[in-house]
Amino acid sequence: MLVLVRHGETEANAARLLLGRAESPLTERGLAQARALGRLLGPVARLVSSPLRRALDTAAALGLELPVEVDDRWVEVDYGEYDGEPLGAVPAEVWRQWRADPGFRPPGGETLEEMGVRVRTACEELFATSGSGARADADVVVVSHVSPIKAAVAWALGADDSLAWRLYLATASITVVAWGSDAPVLQRYNVTAESARR
Image 1 (cartoon, helix red, strand yellow):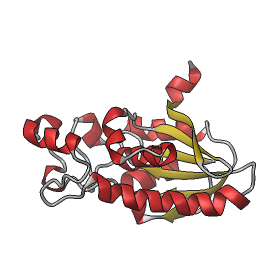
Image 2 (cartoon, rainbow, N blue to C red; image 1 turned 90 degrees about the vertical axis):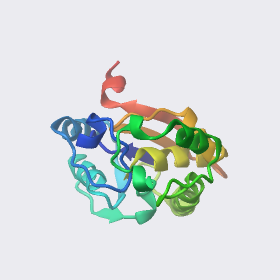
Image 3 (tube, rainbow, N blue to C red; image 1 turned 60 degrees about the vertical axis):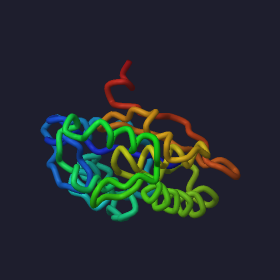
């Protein structure tokens, strides 16, 4: 299975800032979240991560004792000039355009469609290599960010990138996509260590 892990809480997340390619360290809570997620994981064959420090630190905190394969395609969407800004600082008209058009490009940034293409390519490669011949008892874990994980869910469901605006994804959450015989199958979404105990 493909296990998509959103990184733990960062200082920017705690401050409710829009966080794309900018670096922001995990909070103590974020590290604790990542350690707790590691205890939810079963056998893991591969560990892949976005190149951003918050993802790499989350991958390390999972405690899997596997080498981390860095894949740039799992990096967060580029918010351009809005990166690091408070959510409320983005003009309402920009939010409207962003939500209405997956091809909308924030100044200096990346479109949801562009991000979707790179994430789908990464998912399809994992599906081709792991879906058919991988050990049935081991998962591929990818540590990434909110937007790429939503794009992977859209891929699994055969939906377009506008689906992202209809999904909520917590920090330090797990989303699981099973390898179907000829298509991916969304098995679990937005599972946190806290919700798993309920």
